[in-house]
Length: 253
Image (cartoon, rainbow, N blue to C red; front, side):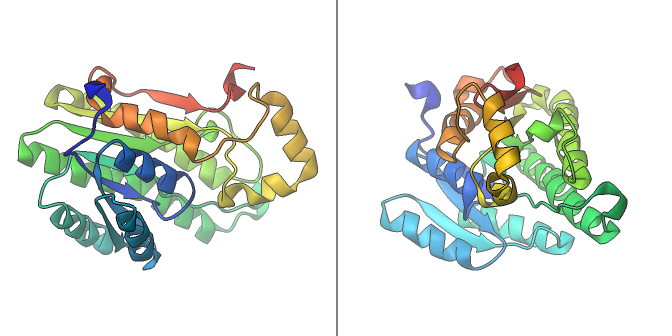
């Protein structure tokens, strides 16, 4: 269907060298999109080359998202790689730190909030300006979390950052929907990625989590593709400020 066809569209995806970010980037390319993969190291260039060898239009760039000056510079470079035009931003990057609340280092708090929330806002702002300057429609897909809905354990910074991403998504939608910029978020459930290795290896928590998921399995990067394509395509033109779970039914139980 043409509603979901992204042929000719241009996207920036952060956190795109592994895990959910890589899965979403691959989904966009499979739908016809040209994508800049943003990673924290030169691995982004290698991953982009691997996709290019499979016939996709793909570029890679290393950006330290904790560095505010580098974020702005890197964003401009990414848009340049796309020929000076942008249609889609996917804020897929995120980091995690685990400590009991009373022991949580303030430095870790700052690191998590900077990458997960502040960088997401900054890139949304840069993308919003780009869309307005182009006088074109635009799509922004933020990545929220199950911890946008509840607090979790030993992850206060992550929970705070993802609660913030959900509210940021709504705030941006209020101001930008009328300008043709759709801002929405996906809230992944429990996903079998490197970030969740500690939970997967904790037999007690793993059993507890699986018992609550009606799909009876952890999610995968493949499970994120459809929603990301939808929120990046014309099919979602009347969607704004939504935070959509992709969780195998976890929140429904």
